Length: 242
Ligand SMILES: [Zn+2]
Image 1 (cartoon, rainbow, N blue to C red):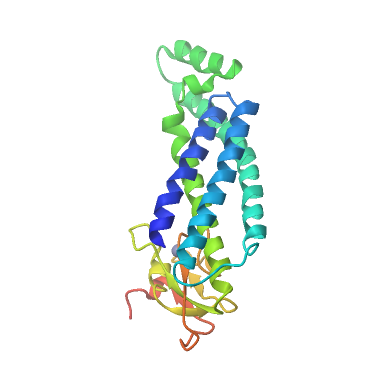
Image 2: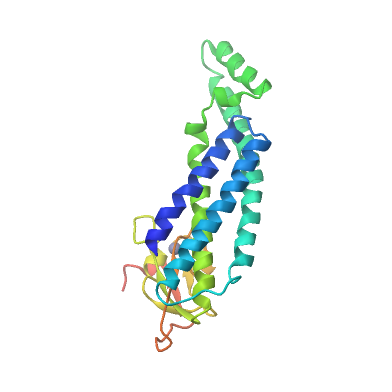
């Protein structure tokens, strides 16, 4: 299953980054929108197909239509992501200009640089002074990544639920896994009674894998005889005390 995530996630990350670059440089057109929409559609279709095939090979045949609603919901979210990128890009560029001008206050020769930045802002060419790569690329890639994992873990949950009311919590087992989710790795839960995590800042979340912000964890089917943990809570502060 991790293989499928790893194969598909970068595709959507790159598609989002390409669109974000057009946003940053003020060069979005009907065509860039069309490409983005087309890629979202193809991406979700191929991703879905790969997952259904993965489970079919294990003898778990997914009913047609099981994931329709979820995938459509995801596609709507990717539409909203376009607007989010536009808003965030505008805010970021405004702040970059503001900050740069403030920093220049006590600089000799400031006028020349001020003219450059201010001129760029007036002509909506801020991107020529503040590059996409340095200021927006990482943000857009992270969002593309998170969206891709959200689609993957969500479709996975939809499939598993069709066969079982319980699952094993699985992490991606890399450095990015948050400590509280490391504590859940391999444990069995009911979809109807997911665990609660409390991080070191006191943030609390109750939910199945992939539902917390930026979470890339996923559910693996657990057999009926596996005993699930009920009303389970993990605290990051307790991590090393056990
Ligand atoms: Zn996680």
